[in-house]
Image 1 (cartoon, rainbow, N blue to C red):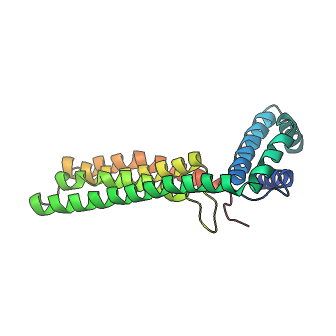
Image 2 (cartoon, rainbow, N blue to C red):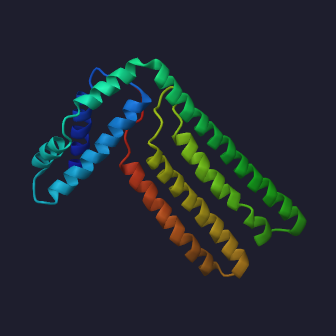
Image 3 (cartoon, rainbow, N blue to C red):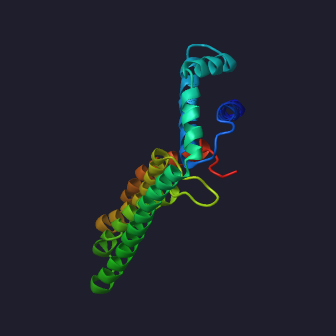
Length: 218
């Protein structure tokens, strides 16, 4: 674990030094995060050949080639406030739409379930509409994480999608458990249904939490 933390710090230090003096932006944050992931993967591949941490790091850095052109592009972009504004506002609109739609799906599921509960009582019919909470919760998670705020950069879209997937699996496991319990009347079947999706969701969530990077703005 200590080796992983040390390696992560070394990679972050190298990338931060590489882009020293470049104006901060959402694009730069995403690029640095992508380069860090690529470097970590290259180091693991190289270490599998028997090299130690230091040798693997040097070889991985060398394999990235000359990044001066990329650094210069980011420097120009950092000075181009108009392009930054367009990029940020576009992502903000997409995130806003996702938050609105996700919230509406959650509310629709809740009100539909309540309506059917008062019409037919508690059972599969009313519980079935809670599937909208699963979809809404997944979309809401993704949209919130991909939104840039005053204090944090937006998360990488792939990573945010995995967070959304983990939340979706956790919510779906609970949904499946309730529906299965009332459909079959057997508690052990409900537990088995919950177990599969819940374990998968927790596994993805823990992996993301343990490999996350700081999105705070300096």
